[in-house]
Image (cartoon, rainbow, N blue to C red; front, side):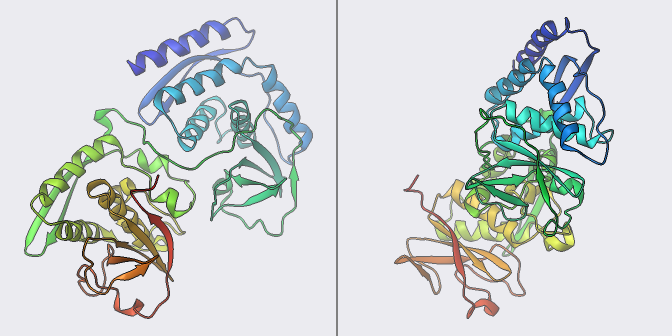
Length: 399
């Protein structure tokens, strides 16, 4: 039904654009397994060349404004509303559509300008800057982002979208030149919160076998995973823990994991069930630091942690938090030590020496493998005298 809707929508777009005196092409956008086909009258623009000038970018934008673009933007916005895409996933649709129209490999400057154009016509407050002969795309966001360049304008934060495309170069000593492109009606701030993962077709999912030793018993799982998750979050930034710890699993992964976990802990007490989830998160996956795995800091979503071969302490903490929240919905705090992240859970009766926070007793549960097999309620020995910060508090009774 959804595919039929998409096809009809873009066929209507074809009827609008076919009369335009430009070259018409049948184009396909692969949005994580959902094929969007549309007959598009391409904008009549020329390639942009270095050195980049503000005049060239403005001329490019003028070409795009003369293009019959509004129906294209409306099509993407309608797709977003139908599939309930959050801003981050909508940007992936903008990125993939722009790639089909103006491939980044052929002319990166034109591709970047088109992404900006689609964003502002979708209502977002986005800007373009020339920095050291590089064209950087920024979007206004009110949320804290920790590993991307940003600048402040009229007390508003603008975060760079395409920093990774230039190899994370040093921006400190460079002079910015913001291009004066006045789109006063584009005021929507961009949010990095992700509340829903797009569903892929069944044949796109892969099956991954997991096993771990729960005391003397070997427990095995077969989980269906969407490999497109890797692309969806390939350049997702380092966000705050409230945003990061609430990214969900996709529906099919949820359906193949959560019921199996519930089945294994059905006859256990809450304390033992939490212990089971802790040990599953600790021992079902291989550990490797982000610097070794990715060459930089990168926080994996719960589904990425299951999908990737390696993960670190932050990734385990996010997955463990998600599992406890979905199965038991207990109050939790996220503990940030120097170079380590862990979780503490409020049980009816604390285990071991509790962590006292705001007058409440929390039991530490370590989801990352250590030199010794830490039971529930035992802290990593080397961190016993180390100060920590509570960086996120989850209370089920509060919205």
